[in-house]
Length: 158
Image (cartoon, rainbow, N blue to C red):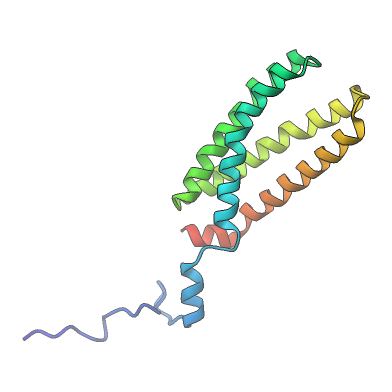
């Protein structure tokens, strides 16, 4: 009867380098970082809603219609498409989803910062509301970008 060699059998608490992990560390490696699934689902919903929202803004607001068509088709739609692909990849635990999420959030900031500043400078109606909404959006995008740039996300996905 052949018996397995106990010395070569790997323990579930053994790391790739051969050192033994504590039980709490091994359990922490199995669980996603706090907020991972929530932000991935929120991103998927937000990017999915961005496409009909762009169409509603183009059709509903006569002010700056040409600008909205240009910005919507050239910047917002590609950003939403990259964001949707990133969120689906993150929900399927793909490591490249983190990179796409960073790219999509950077594209969002690259679009909303100049658009918000130009809108604040040129349109006097609703300036306070625009300023408040732009600042909230910029803060949320920056915080989300910092979340997805954390090294623990990359360690978890690898």
